[in-house]
Image (cartoon, rainbow, N blue to C red; front, side, top):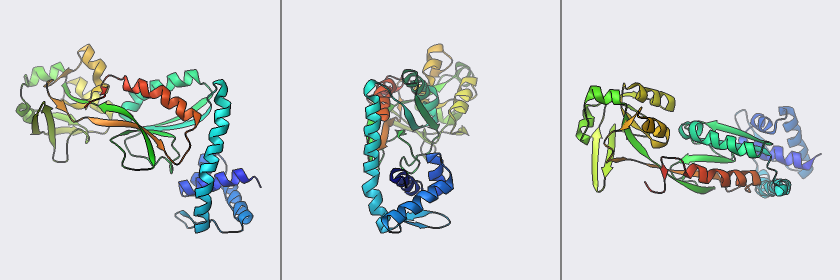
Length: 303
């Protein structure tokens, strides 16, 4: 029996909650993982897992083995990778999750530039709006909006992702000039759920002055491309992350509405699991990406 392979199969089965998911992560067959688990249980002389049709749970012995072996294997992996990267070589797999809005436009070019320097690195870049469990879903890093509440994550703060209110010149030509927050109540909006509160209220601030305006969304979407296309077409106006429209503003395709007022900003973080040793590839990418993300127009040190 290869004890290291058996322990890896055991750890991934527990973290993923199923033999099938562990086999997929380890790129081996499901029977191979099951065989590793049987061999490991025979080796230690104890039942390590309780299996049901829906999930896999550790026995008390299994939980103790996981607590002892997971950090040890992570440390070994990190040491081996560190030895390989002593000559400047970064390789292996990096699994990264981010919101689609910043991921497609800004994070993907950063990943491409990093891979140009380290062509032996494979990156899984997964973009969607949900919050993932980094350990259970086998992610090395995640870009998160909002400070994570979990205590088992190590965080690198990136800055405030600013939101602004924009419209196409054609929209404003049709709707008329907007000079006060109260006029927004008569406007037609495209919004995301993150931009307005549950009551459909848009909150704007100028110094100590706060204006809460109920707005009428004609379109709600969780897709950045739909949001941008709608704004550029001049059909609707709306709040949007500045980082998505910096080029449109510079080209005059969109203009700011009530530019003296600020909308609610979102704090952004790059996070990784504290239960894992920070592999050299993860450290190298973090050091490469953080200053580049902070330099994106629309991300700032203050809200």
